[in-house]
Amino acid sequence: MKTVRLTMAQAIIRYLKNQSVERDGQQNPFFAGVWGILGHGNVAGIGQALQQTPDFRFYPARNEQAMVHLASGFAKMSNRKRAFACTSSIGPGATNMITGAAVATINHLPVLLLPGDIFARRNVAPVLQQLESPASQDISVNDCFKPVSRYWDRLSRPEQALTSLPEALRVLTSPVETGAVVLALPQDVQVEAYDYPEAFFEPRTWHIRRTPADPEILARSVEWIRQARAPLIVAGGGVHYSEAEAALARFASLTGIPVAETMAGKGSLACDHPQSVGAVGATGNLAANSLAARADLVIGIGTRYSDFTTASKTAFQNPEVRFLNLNAAEFDASKHSALPVVADARLVLEAWAGALQGYSVPPAYAAEIARLRAGWDQEVERLYHLGTAGRPAQSEVIGALNEFLRPEDVLVNAAGSAPGDLHKLWRARDPKNFHLEYGYSCMGYEIPASMGIKLAAPEREVYALVGDGTYLMMPSEIVTSIQEGIKINIVLVENHGYASIGSLSRSLGSGGFGTVYRERGSASGQLDGEYLPLDFVSSARGLGAVTFEASSLEEFKTALEQARQAPRTAVVVVHTDTSQKVPGYASWWDVAVAEVSESEEVRQARAEYEEALKKERYF
Image (tube, rainbow, N blue to C red; front, side):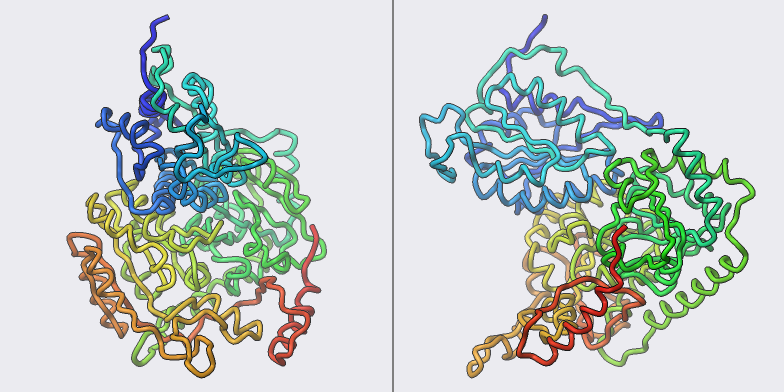
C-alpha cells in the first residue's frame, strides 16, 4: 500500500479538495475553500496546510460568526450542493462560531467547522484560552458545539482523520442529516505527521440521493387528495432543496390546489401563478390564512411546521383537518399526526401529477381562491404605494425594492420587523429571488450571508435589507467584501432601535421598553432621553463602502440605481416613518404575557392572550 507522509492538517485539506457531489447527472466540487481567522490554535496546522495548497483558497474574515453565516448563505444559494469549511483558533474564536453552527443546523445547511482545540498530550495545560474543569480533563469549549451540530468529533490522533472525514462528508451531503459538522482539532495533533494511504486522497463523488416514496403510502396519499374538498399546500424550504419548483407548479395547475408559503418556501411558486396564495401563519396574509382556517387537508411539502408557520397551532381550525406531509426527513414528515410520505419532493410531485389526472378542486373552492388572491393583490398595492409625505413607511421601501429588483436579483433578510413584512408583501418571481433566514432569525446574518450568496451566484445582484439594530451586529464584514471584491448592496432601514420587538412589546402592554436607541434620561434613569446621534452613512463609508442616503421614496429609488452602478459594496441608508405598520391578517403568535402586573395595559394584554390560547390545538 502506497502512503504519503503528511501532517493531519495537510491530510484534511488534501482530502477536502478532492470531494465532489453529484445529483441528476450534474457533478461539481463540494468545497469552495476555507474561511478563517488564524490564531494560536490553528495557525501552524490548518494555516500552514492552506498556505501550501494555493488551489484551495483561504479567505480571511473579520468575525468568526460572520464567516459561518457566509458559508450558510453560500450553501443555501447552492441548494446544498456546495459548501465552505471554516477554521478558527481555540477559545473565543471557536465559541464565536457556535451561533453560526446553530443557524446552519436549524436550517439544514452543510457547513464544516474546524476549530482548534486543547493539546491532546495535556502536559502543557492549561494553555492560553483553555477551559479547565475539575470534573474532567477531556473537555474544552468546543464541547459547546455538540447540541448545535449534526456530527461532532475530536481528532486526538492524526490517523483518526481516516475514519472521521468520511463520516463528516456523509452527513454534510445527506439531504436529511445535513447541518453543521464540527471536527475539533487539538493544536498539537494538527501538526503531527502520519503515513496516510494515498488511496484516501483519490477523488470521490458523493451522490445526493432522491428517495422514492413507499408505494403503499404513495397510493394512500393519492386517495387522501382525491377525497379532499378544501386542500391547501404549505410549501417549505424543502421544495427549493429538491429543486421541485417546476414540478410543484405543474401539480398546482393540474389540480387547482392553492399553494401557501413558509418563510423558507417563499418563491416555491412564482407570485403570478394562479394557485399562489402567498404567506401563511403568524406572518401570513389574509388569503392564505383564510384558506388555512378552513382546509380539510393540509399538504406540507418540505416544511418543519415552525411556530410561525402554524401561527402557534392556531392556523388550521377545521375540526376535520388532516395532514399529509411530504418530506425527506421522517421526523418532519410525521408531525401533526400526518400521513408521512418520506421521500424526495420532486419525485412525489411528479408521481402525484400522474396519479391525479382528472382531479381538481371543487368549482366553488376555485372561485374562493381567485377572490382571495385578487383581494390580497389589492392590499399589497395599497401598502406598496401609501403615498406617504416625507419619510417612507417600511412597506413602501419594500415595494420600491420589489419593483426595482430584477427577477434574478436576490433579496436577503433574517431578523427584525422586515421578515414579517417581507413574508407578507414580497412578490417572488424567481425561486432564488428571496433569501430569508428565519429558522433561527439571527441578527447579523444578512451582510455576511449576502457575500456567500454572491460567491455562489456571481452573475446575480444581491441586496441585504437590514434594520439599524441588525446592521450594528455585523458591519465588520463590509471590510471583507471590499478585500475580496465581493460586491453586495446593503439597504439600511434606520428606525432607531429594535422595531420588531418594540412593536411586540407595545402589543403586550410593555410600551416598547428597552427597544429604542435613546440616551438615558437624567431624571428618570430610564432610556427615554434624546435619540442617539448615530451616523450610519459615515460608519459605512469608513469601512470602505460607497454610501448613499435617502429621506424620501424618490431619493431612495435614485439611491438604489446609483448603488447598482457602484464599483464595490454599496450602503443605502433610508430614514423611515416608524408609525405606519403592516397589519396582521387573521393570525396570532403565542408570546406569553405576565399573569400578574400593576400595569393596566399588561393586564388587558393578558386577558386577550388567555382568550387567544383557546384556539391552540394539539394534532
